[in-house]
Length: 426
Image 1 (cartoon, rainbow, N blue to C red):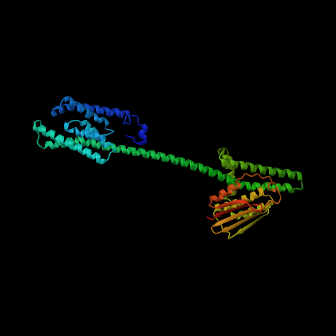
Image 2 (cartoon, helix red, strand yellow; image 1 turned 180 degrees about the vertical axis):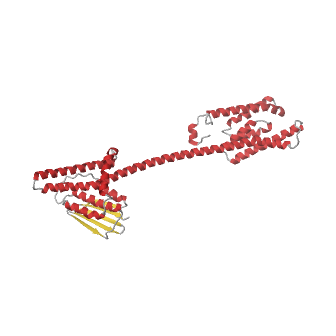
Image 3 (cartoon, rainbow, N blue to C red; image 1 turned 90 degrees about the vertical axis):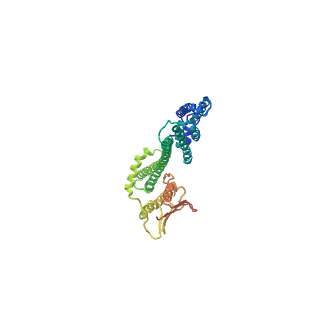
């Protein structure tokens, strides 16, 4: 099987135009046999032509040695074989040259033309030889034998190598096509594997981010309220001040530690470092939270959420505009989480500030806005000592954008902070 293109150049190890050394040795051997044959056949040719025998032998050697270049110039080999056919020389050259020509990548019309020329030449020469033999009395058969012998001989010397060469050439091209197709499939499989790995990595990152966002939304708000309640208890306890202060401080410390650990765990999940090591504990915590939360919060629980913040000492108002209706679960859960995280941020960063929650049911979308004023006292924003990981706004934006919505947050002119989001209804 021959090879072409870059592969041919890469594996070529033979001399000159041969792809392999064994091919060069084989063609050299054929050329030597052909040269010897033509040299032997050149003796009677020289006698019949009336030229010196040495000239006939040299002519036969030169003509027969042309078979060496059959792979590089198959047309030249066939033309030489046709040219020396009248001298009754080069039978091996004609057979091998025609086979090589038929197996090559040359156009079919060229192969057919040269094969026809060789067939006609062999037919004429055989016809003349048989006729001369019958005239000399060497053959005593009828006249029918002359055309029969000529046709049979010419077809026998032309048809088999031509058909075999066509078959070998077609099989070679088929194998090359199959090899190229296999290489193409291998490249495609490799590309698909790389894309699958990229998709898997993307899915792992998305799942890591989703787990971090869910844990932040579900846990951070409640722990934040616990810290706020503990701070209030610490401030108003009167019956046993020392014990109340110690217990309240203990609750506050536990809440702060929980939030700090949660922030560290969220950082691990988002960065991807040590995910395998933390996977077991995270999975247990998420499973427990999912069981507790059920199918997730909805907008019907928004009033209860605002009530929890009010119970913690925040002055917060809830305003609902438009006709109340139900939405897809992911839309309602996202809207709830946005309000939840915004109220949590008010507890963390603007303790004592008044907050306002607005929910608007519009045609084809739902809008929400949480706005708080400036803290009443300087430094009160951090009076509870609540740690912040900076992931709240990022998580809200990711949730809203994932549903095709718009999220905007930033400080107000009055010194407060505003969080706004619009989510398509479907």
